[in-house]
Length: 77
Image (cartoon, rainbow, N blue to C red; front, side):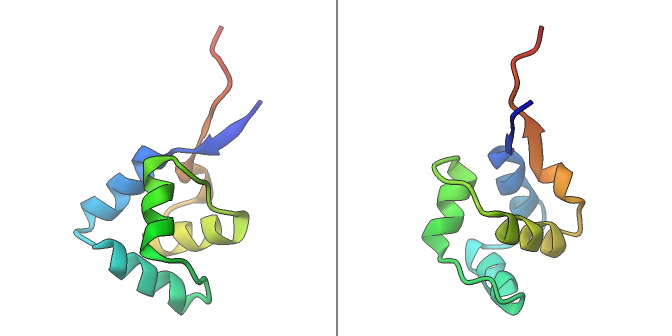
């Protein structure tokens, strides 16, 4: 089973909180996670994927379990 980032959920979480990308970056910086607004945009657009440290930071700032950022990318039968 292949698991991948649910990038649409990532963008939705930020928008639901009325946070700008810049606010998310500052929150990640507080957790010693150094990313740019461009990197966050790439994650939200599905162009790149955060590493496990970054995923854990995202789950922490959004207050959700890590698995809520992921989805099963395996084809369904």
